[in-house]
Image (tube, rainbow, N blue to C red; front, top):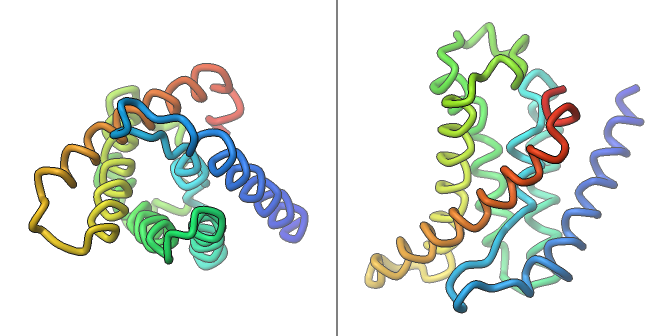
Length: 171
């Protein structure tokens, strides 16, 4: 069963990498905001599944984007970081205890918790992505501008996906 689930996750990563690099990376709003829809994999990955496999999948997802976009590892870093932080952010948002996270389901989130969780995760991902891109706080205003715009644009696509495929996303 694990091998079938792992194979399905790898196929999903390949699909998201290709979708991101060949479609969504070409979409730009005033040359400032680009949606990074591949984070939906990290946002919806069940918290009760094997953590180490999840972190490897997060790395592979970011690394795949880096290979196609020639970005030198910044997507892998941002994806791996929010993959690592996801468990703690879920605990913070939902109020679950450390030992309860193994039984947590996203369907337990109310609408406000889900919105806060997605905004926080996407914002952290994008901030890390753009900070690593510039590697300096000299242009902090520019980093924050791109982070806010890209986060809003990404969240629009994430919520659109959740509206279309809500039943599947709750599992």
